[in-house]
Image (cartoon, rainbow, N blue to C red; front, side, top):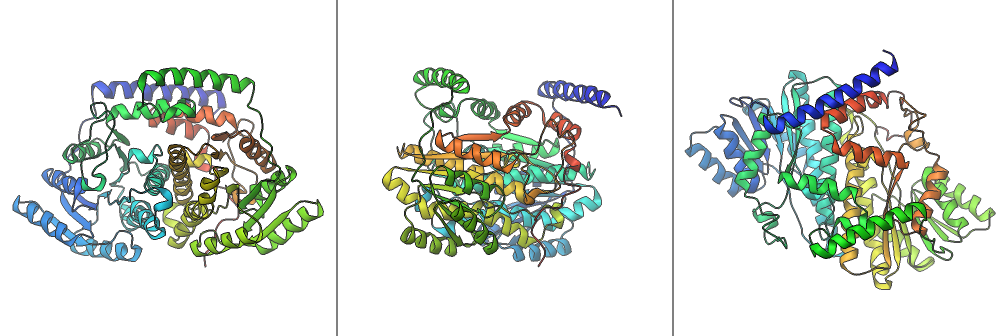
Length: 586
């Protein structure tokens, strides 16, 4: 098909989907009958999950409830049996991969294939980042995000085989916008959002049009999980009742809706704040009249800075630690920071790469220290961090850059790869920040850089574990930035970097349909842009800038219009010739 004709067809599809979305506001989709469906709900013994069990049962569904709370399971089973509904309850710790697979097999034998999977189980610690225990961070990730991988691995194959099924992910508005004091929760919910976005694309490209996905992001719900949470203006952002949320979830399943943000007005609020300069986005709940002045002022300042960038601070003498610094973007950042007079510390698991980068920089007359460290290993991170403090100095600039990828379709990704990718690409950020942030806070001087990705902003098929981990890294960074801001540590800065495809071995072979429009980035250019962002204390950098505009535009379009644009850009085939350094099978 000629390219011009394809482009015209794309415009027609986009306009058609926008028109259809407007029609759906007035005339919603008809509801499908759920009678006879087998619905499995994780965390279904309490809160929203318990109300969803009742609501699905009222629709004539066979309900399967998984939970760790045996007393809660007994109670919900008794209630539903009393009402004449069919319910099966199983004690299951959703953070335990093998336990999920075992219970899933039992469900298949004792009940039937699950046709509607609701990933609802969730936990929350509710402490400031530096007060969180390491085990609680790992537990939250296991329940709130990794469990989604395991349940989908258990039940999705049958859905795809039958071309019939529905996966519901109960995330949170905290999975869309980072909030202070919720670093582990935000990161895990961002991961859940990234995972379901990526998985939905895989299902779509597999042409399984009767297997649907629904992402639900509710604001504060009146359950024990978030008891005591309060808004400054409760009349504007009211706490929602779990019965209402449960009913809305079931309605979304009946109508095959993709994305539900509750309340609906909050969706527009979130998109609006993302389009504003970062200084104003999180203050909309505070001092409204003064806020209007702040918004106008920051918008004017942003326009001014676009023309005349802020001055650069001198980095000479700074102690910079870069994870994954022996190759790719990391290696180029080592050179870039060293050329600015910084003492550079490199962490990596590649000893040959470490020796090579050390030899090169020493020949150039720079100060460099190299340490072998597996950043996914918490104790190893803490041990090497202590050596750095003793042998070098306090780290003043931390660059979380280490990253790995599996680059396979979801059902082909080994479980160990999922855990490895999440460990390196996200959880490692918790451990490095725990190791180095306290001294930055004490001195009120420091900078943390997160090297994420544009696929941490929207899901891509074939990268479910990578997208989830990068979404999580962004959620963590957004939340931690708020904590630092609330602590009034104005000398501690954060920079989030989301590059498009970079020409490194990690994503070798990735191709764009229109490479002249979306060119592969040179790692040296990316490294220089990161250093510039640190010099100017920039918060968020998306590379290239055209992708930033594209992403904001996509957020305003109906999801089917976004799908149409992705098809036109050839995202389905972007990994067809992939030959990068992905994780290998044991």
